[in-house]
Image 1 (cartoon, rainbow, N blue to C red):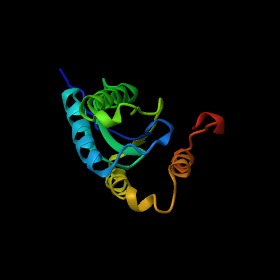
Image 2: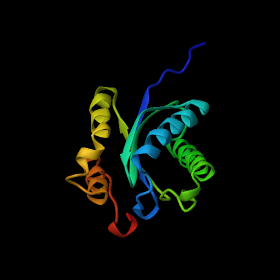
Image 3: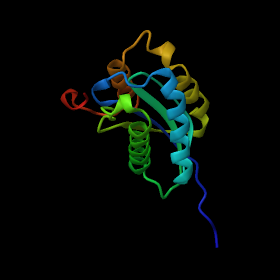
Amino acid sequence: MSDTFSKLFFHVVFSTKERIKFLKPDLRVRLFEYMGGIAKNNNFQTVFTNGIDDHLHTLLLLKPNMAVSKAVQLLKGGSSKWIHDNFSDLKMFTWQSGFCAFSVSHSQVEKVIEYISKQEEHHKKMDFKDEYKKLLKINNIDYKEQYLF
C-alpha cells in the first residue's frame, strides 16, 4: 500500500487584538519557542516565526490532515493561555479573531523565511495595516476594507 507524501507550507500572519503592543522582545523569544512546542505536540511545524510588538509571521509546515485554520487555532489558543498563566501583567492579552494565510511553494521557502526574519527592519518603513493590505494584494486576495481591521 502506498503512503501519502506532502510538503505543505503556509505563511501565516496575525496580530494582537486592536494591534496593542503586547509582544515585547523578551516575550517574543519565549513565545515563539512555546508556539514551536505547540506545533510539535500537534504534529505540525513552525519552520520560522518572527514579529514585532503587535503581530507575528510564521511559516508553517502542515500535514494533509491538518487544516490551516486548526493549526492557527491551536497556536493562538495555546499561546494565549500560556501568556495568561505566566505573565500576570498581560491578563488583557488576546489575539485578533482572524488571520491571513498564503500557500508557499518549496522554491519560495527561503525567500519567505528571509522576509519573516526582517520584520523589525521592515516595519521601520511600513506599518502593519499597509503590510497586511500589500500581502493580500500580492497574493491576489479580494477583501473589503471594512472587514480588515
